[in-house]
Image (cartoon, rainbow, N blue to C red; front, side, top):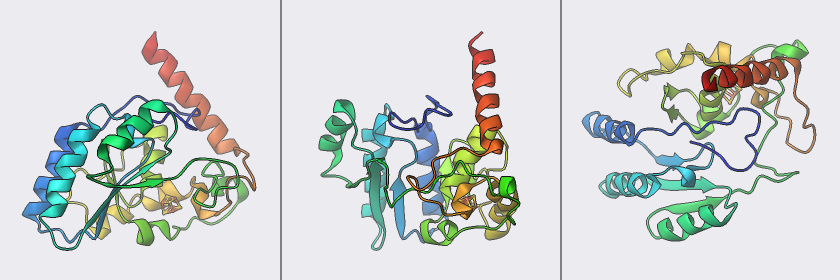
Length: 213
Ligand code: SF4
């Protein structure tokens, strides 16, 4: 989902189609998938043009289950976002995470381990936060999904049925090699952008320019 706060390196107006949310719910019901928690985050979810519908669909699904929480993470930044939050607070738990310096919530993802000769390894986000779902499919983690978007690499798993541990783990070597979460450097401690990401953002902007022409 798009973002109005920090995501200046690789801006996108891409929104997850609501049909994909419906398919997620349909497959979850069909597979009796044991979700413990479902979160809307990544970019700024309140900027999605159909966020109220999405929240209602997911709330209906979660309410039909005995043990599953539903939450939305927002930067709570700006009038439009705060207006939406007021309208959905009764239906979904809202977690406000303003993106400020010295924030203990965010690592600097722009430090690619490969630039520092560090070995590739996954971080604890996969086990602590679970799967990520974007319009490109299911990923072993949310940051990995964001990396795949910027790099335009097709490593997402297309359906929940196919999102087995074996299939999801195949993407990790590629994703973790360039993901700053593996280094766990907090934003505010070091906000630099390593060479891999400087080039990746330049390539991204160049692709966007070509699409506009
Ligand atoms: S891609 Fe990043 S967030 Fe995902 S497991 Fe690897 S290091 Fe962690």
